[in-house]
Length: 191
Figure (cartoon, rainbow, N blue to C red):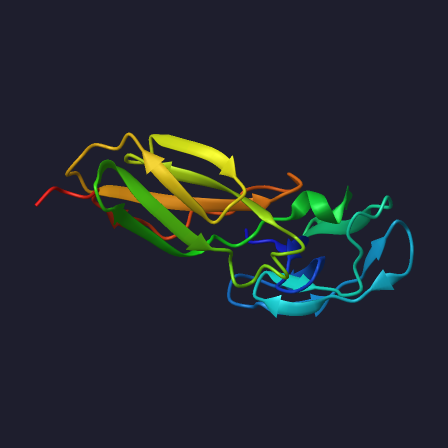
């Protein structure tokens, strides 16, 4: 049987929240549920999607954890669990954007890779990201690197190479983003 649940999630522009889904699979009613910081005042969740909500006034690098109440509800009863976490441990940026792969004139075994931080990442000049690069059919990854460009060396001449990039908070908090959309390029070929 389908169970209604209340669980934590990350909403856009906010911190983890919780929600309550009541009823069967065709009923998706959402009720805001309170969340608290270190046993402090409870904050209501504002629904941001079908399975997420957020609450504001959050503080990074707090020594006091946030606590999310996860409750499973079904006809036999309920079961709850309190899940404490520090906000910086759940950071996951969106993937980097605008990945470009270009040949370098005169270099038959090199490619120039350039990309932009995700547009959703606030103030990348103050909160930098580090990047990991994946190439060669997903079998190889290198990094992390702090810059938004990289010269890939030792690539096979005359071959089309598929590249992707992932981002992570510079301080190593949280986890790497999903891989960017792929971009492809071929090293410079002598005329």
